[in-house]
Amino acid sequence: MSFEDELKLLFSSRHLLIYIVTSEEERLEYVINKIALNESIDSIYSWDFLDGYHCNPNYSEQAKKNPLAALELIENLNSKTSKIFILKDFHLFIYDTIITLKLKNLVRRLKESGSYIIMIAPDIKIPDLLNNIITVLDFPLPNVQEISEELRRLLSVTKMSTYIKISDLSFACKGMSIESIRRSIAKLISSERPVTDVFHIIAREKERIVRQTNILDLYPVNMTLDEIGGLSNLKQWLKKRSNSFSLYAQSYGIPTPRGILLVGIQGTGKSLSAKVISQEWNLPLFRLDVGKIFGGLVGESESKMRRIIKVSEDCSPCVLWIDEIDKVFVHNSNSGDSGTASRVLSIFLIWLSEKTTQVFIVATANKILNLPPEMLRKGRFDEIFFLDLPNLHERYKIFQIHLMKIRPLTWRQYDLNYLSQLTDSFSGAEIEQSIIESMHNAFHEKRDFTTCDIVRAVKEIIPLAFTDSSTISSLQDWASLGKVRLASN
Image (tube, rainbow, N blue to C red; front, side, top):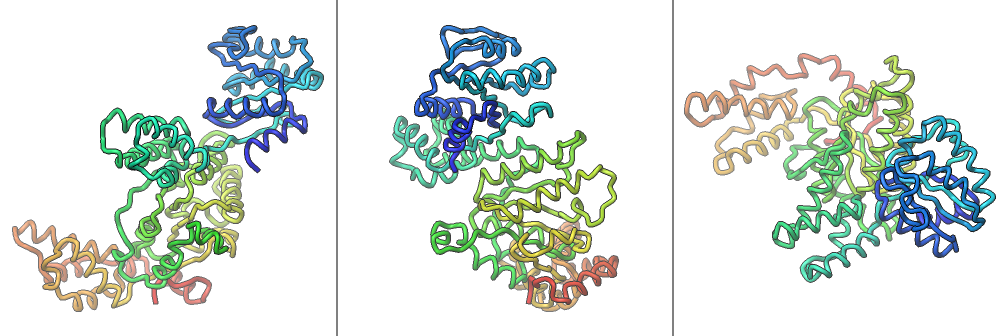
């Protein structure tokens, strides 16, 4: 059901106090005016704190800087015709006891006149006393069709439509408000940059919007699957689903992929895999810092989790990367947080099971046994992959990939067979570190590094497989039980 249909239904079913969550006041007022015209609502009164009422000339500037007077005007109007009263940013005053009681008493008056109060606010703030009489509604960001219409209007004025495909630009703008889109186009015109730079400007604007959440980051990626050594099973799984977000896949009937959980030993490529998925599938990558979810105020953490879900869904299709999820959602945690972690986990798990939007979750974890069992059950993730220490062939590929990056012309002079045999029980990150260490040593001596330098660096490194052998062994034993899919052959 569209937002317009939902709001019409609330009007027809006599929901008198409606609280709409949005920061797009202008676009929402346009929709309300459109509905009012079709539903034969007599007039619309709009109020904000600084200017008072300003839509109806008979009441211009009344109740200026006085929210109580704004409600009293509604109460004292004698007209029996149906009206809509729009109160902007009223969440700033709604917790005042007099305002709360006045709103509660106004319901009777609204029933008699067939009128409605619509409160517009960017956040949900409703006193308990009003919970049963206020209906909350989210105003969604513009869909692709609305964005296309706005872009056609903007680009026709600038004559840019001949150089840019509207459908591609509309897709790039998904998750942005109309005002943000206008700012981006205006920035392009003002800067006198090439027309094709509009996609870069849109990406930067979207990055700014996402970072304002202070939890999500738009993560730039310029790597491919070929830059990961090994993990053949995981790569094959990802390549088979590379077009799963396309319209063709939807018409074929393929359900949208939910996500994967990457479990394994530190340094085996879990985070690296999360990064390259977005590049392979040509989707934006958002990184969630789970440590920032938990706030000090009651209900703040739950609100942040819902905000994360909304932002990622607004920007879909996208990849949402949740790194080291096992450090936050812990099985049988006794953190003394009055159940906050459990409530946040519940919101997240329900979303994982029921989400229909094209948000692909990539979660990574080092200690699978720390995670709550309900997160691991079927239906949460499409697949759980275990990333083990690289085998001999994979260590060869890891050395080859790193050496080809830094010595593209001379990498063949290094004895990769010997190095891969020497680094048994090394992770990919430890192999990379051995190359870096050998480069530093040779650079200090003002010469190029050799196989012997890497060998010396390898012998100086104590791999995690020795320092934390019990944890790694328990992970490998768990993976051998067949409860998880192996990322490598």
